Every structure is written in structure tokens, then in C-alpha cells.
Length: 379
Image 1 (cartoon, rainbow, N blue to C red):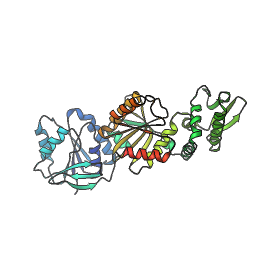
Image 2: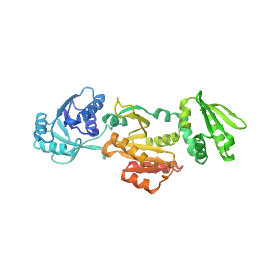
Image 3: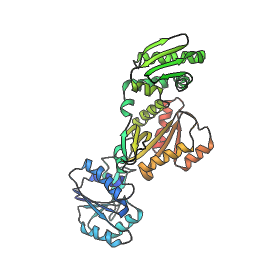
């Protein structure tokens, strides 16, 4: 069946309207919306037009309290090659559209994203077609009006950093004290005028700590991530090769973010994934927000926050919830990844459960971690 006209119902979240358009590829797309959903229309149109530049867009403002508005639009475009998408908008708008479409020649459809199908809802339920084009993270974020400013995916995909994360995990018992040393400002000295230069105050280290940091720095030198590595009686000094190397090694939790991104990306259910996503709600807003790992599964968003500490609290859960639900809507998956159980214990677990956030712990076993992620993301 060829779709000439697609009628979409616009609401707060319009992933299914975009998904229908990208898969059916209609010549014209008709949007029905309430007056207050103008931004939703603009966002959906902007996202679809990038993929379907030849499509014609028609905007109709309707009043839910006046069912005749919807009846008039349905009858205007009534045709066997018109598809009416009942997946979007408010429940009331969808029900009114369903009622208005009785005895029409148009085809009623529903996006069953959980099973990867577009369904026909007319006389009997049947599959129209599989969903061939899934939404990427960028598509879903775009549909909400948010703007992605930057992300660290290209950095984490570099061979030297992937290998370094592999080394950290293979030597996890050594890496645990090293990362604590690197975040200790009483041991690590940095200098404003020499931003890539680092000194390690070795007199403040135990013998085991000293051996661990020496071994790690030798690996960085072998991988050409640091230069000018020198050992003196009271300190070690070295210089990072560039800002990217320094940021990856010295930023607390970046290794966990890179590991989580790598594991999520490898899951067969995942369409695409990005890491370190810096975004703004609106182009005019100066406050930047960040999510550590973001992925799409079946055109639904997955938002992950990574904490290499036990000191995460209700505030961290609230932040994840706000970001995730603003970007992903009702079906977003929210995950907090950590290397430690929360310091405040059961209270945090209970609050996370109430907010629909899964807490996944990494204990050094990558396969176990990946299995826990897969189980969480497939729920």
C-alpha cells in the first residue's frame, strides 16, 4: 500500500509521528494539534524534513472540545491512500480521531515500536509493515526541541582510549587505587601556566600505591599518552600529549563512562549510542546539561548516568529523571551505573525504584556488567 497522505496527531512527545513519516514516506504530512502544541509541530516538522525534504507539511489547529474540527479534517483527506496515525497526541485526541474515522476509506495505523511493526487497525488487527527506519538518539532529541551541542563518542572510539580502558579493567585491582590517587588534590599537583604538566607527590604514597601509580604511568608512556616521564626523590612528573589524553585520564569517572558506552553500543538491541552528550533545552538558554551515555532501542531513548563513587543521592536521581523524561517521554529507560552501592543504602534504592531508575553496579567483571545492562535495557 502506498501512502500518499499521512495524518499525525501532535502532542508533547512526537516520536511515533516521526517514525510513521520516515517509514511510510508520504507525499504530504498533515498535522492535527491543539493550539498549545505549536512547538511540538515545529520540532516534528524540523526532524522529518531533514529525512524527507520533498514532503509537503500541512498544519491544522483543532479544539478537542469541538469534535467537528477533527471530523472535518478526516473527511477532507479521506482516501484509500491516506493513513491516519493513532499513536500520537493525547488519549482524548486519539479517541476522537478514531471515532471520526469510522466509515472512512482511510487506513488507521498504530506504531507498535516494542515489536518493530506498523499495524493496521481498521476491520481487524494486521501488520502493515515492519519498522525499517528506527529513530536515532539525534532524531529523538531533535523531536523535543533540544539541541545537542557536543559529545565524546569520537574520543571514546579512539583505539588508544579503548585499549586503555581494556587495560584498566584487566588490572582492575591496580586501577582502583590509581584512580583514587589521580583525584586526590593533596597528591596531584597541576599548574595553570603548564596545563598538560602533572606532578605526583610520592612522599604521600604508601609503597603499594607508589608501585601501582608507577606501573600505570609506564603504560601511559608506552601508549604515547604522556611524555617527559621523570622520577625524582620526592615526586614523579610527566606531561600529557594533549588535552584529550589529560581529560580522559584525569576526569573522575570518564573511564566508567567509556566502558558503559562501549558495552551498551555492543548490545544487539541498540540502534545507536553516544556518550558525553552536552545539550540545551532551547537555543536561547545558556545553561548546558549533560548525560553520560544515551542510546536508542526500538526508537525509545535510554539515558544513563555514570557515578564512580558511592556518594550519589536523591539529587542525582532527580537530575537523571528530569533530563530523561524531558528528552524521551513516557517510555524512556533510566539507568544509573556505579562502581559502588549508594552510601545511603536502601533509601536510595527505594527512591530510584519509585522514579523508575535502575541502578546497575560494575564490580570489575565486564561480561557480568554487560549482561546486567542487557537485562535492564530489555525490560
